[in-house]
Length: 366
Ligand SMILES: [Zn+2]
Ligand SMILES: [Zn+2]
Image (tube, rainbow, N blue to C red; front, side, top):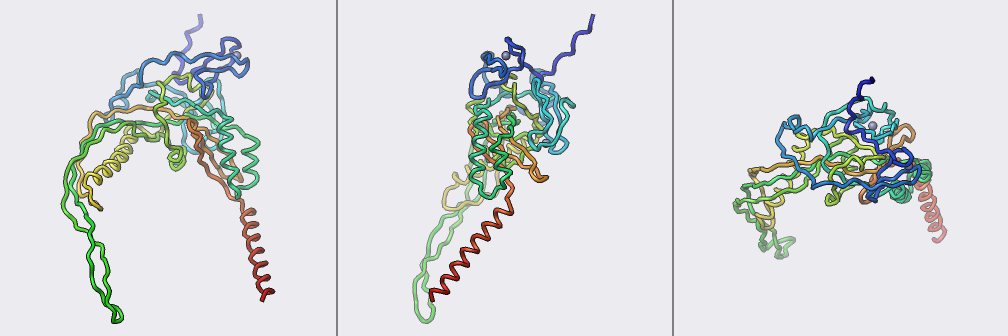
């Protein structure tokens, strides 16, 4: 008798069509799976319960309960460091973030299982349309680039990993409140006297307390996309978060997190501190504020690992990698683009010809 097959990786789910056996994929914008071969559709399974928050303690990531962890097979990108998860029968050979060849299923990671996912609302067609519109406004882009968008190379739907943190905070502060007042002064210049108003600030000591309960402070858990891209994709509507189910990932890719939980929390605390500083300034009041000291107590910290939907097109153009990203929930676009030196030169030349013609015309008019 053959030995029993090894247990499957939990991150390697496949959902075969019950009519033809092909792999089903999650149908963006619809609550169902669809078969591209026979058109069969299947509803998503009943998603149970609410989104679970896990308590956060520094250094605890390895001591989480067994059911909060999973093994996934990943393909590390040798260029940008992304840990790309390929789901089902997907054996893509390029990293979706930088178009570098990768070898499928070469590594394995044990990591924290996602608790929530915002499913793709935009399908590939809508994402491409958003990208084409964005490119169409870029007159200086080289022709090859616009062709690229029009002829429609594929885009990759990638679930990008994030951490979100909740925490209660209370802060005691000391600082100064500045109140603006004006004084009138007489000045003499060139033998004439006149009155000027001068702005001054009266500083007085201030101290007090502010408190805030933070909900879903969002931190990117990956370094493969530049932060300026992913920041520009915000805002996300986290009200659309669904409890994690592998069905949402079928037909898409997922990136495994490469920013560890503790590093994510450090960044979340910095975000919280900036918001607390705003609260303190408002609490001090007056026209200007100085903050000298803040003592913040934090408790009831919890976290979630979530996946957010991003359409990515990475391509090489004259040896350089360029990327477009489209928010798979809202359609917001962000990207890098090369400039065509020819088009810019022509524009400059055109402007010079016009300027020259005007100069000549002016000459003759005299
Ligand atoms: Zn089928
Ligand atoms: Zn890469």
